[in-house]
Length: 479
Image (tube, rainbow, N blue to C red; front, side, top):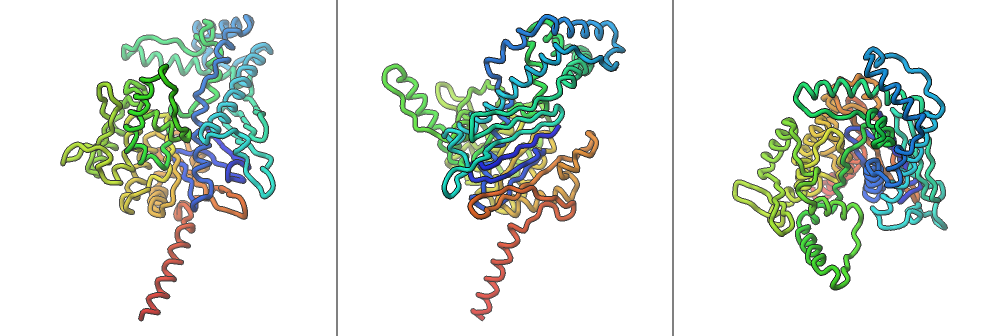
């Protein structure tokens, strides 16, 4: 499964396209569109989990002949296990129309959710995000999302309200539903040997009429993130002041119905991050996963930082983030800028470690010494190896240099090479985009990764050489 996201004439970008990898790096100078593209990526991934209300009854309204056909196939498979690997006959036309209708409606709803998510992130209507030219706004403005296995494409237009959809082949989809029954039965057999309560498969739920329309839409986004979290560049300030913000919201909510509540607007990414911090600790996001690899990884990293980052619950008050150090317990307002910067990363990782999770981090190297920048790069590479995908925007040559060492060691490989390897490989895929400003627009281009040189670091070495030349000239003048 691969996810491709393309932007055309949107925000500051004339064009940019990425194939999502386990680790995706967005590199370039300031004001070249990196953060904008990272925000679009996050909104696309987050939209996959939004279930529009008007889809709820679609499956229950499926024709009787469709349900009867699936029921017959299910009975055959339950009664004759050898059929689980037998090729299927061509499904009837009614079944194919049903599958195609569900996928079309779901992908159109997904596209609308992408547009609304980008609007929410920037607090403006979609048409206002079209790239500006000298005399007007550009045409050909869209976000195009392409998925493989299953193969489909959704194009979200920003120069109109149109969402263009190319759904997957319905025959392939129907076959997947039947093949999925075999995988489910094998997994269920293993669960029952461990004493777990029985569950119903997607196909069984489909036949029973409960949530009939959802097995196919869920499969559209198989392998997509369960939680997509965006850590904005201003996360340090939010981490230090969110208690004040949360307290103000609580005080205003107490006056609801007595006087109007006025809340100044926030960028969508900042608002989402604040809502994560003030959410109930019972929320699934904060449930630590039982995975010793991640636990040991975070524990080792916190040991090197000299502090444990903890979200503490307090009665009748907003939760508080504290750093537990050998000298005592301190709020983030009283710790080093390094801890303030990394606290959000650590806190989110502690709460959202799932195989399908995805984290977007703007400039993880901010406020860090070069040695710590390298350590953070290694830490994130380890997180990626554990199964959590990461998107990073960065200006740091030390960060990119350490990622290049991970490539040279074989732990990270170009995503195009990774697709050709078998699924048992322990390597993680990496993709890098170089952003630059050309005339009156910005462009993001994929960087070819060399197994020896890694990611091209010329954007940094050119600056170093210029600095060196100036230094030599000034020293010669002094001497």
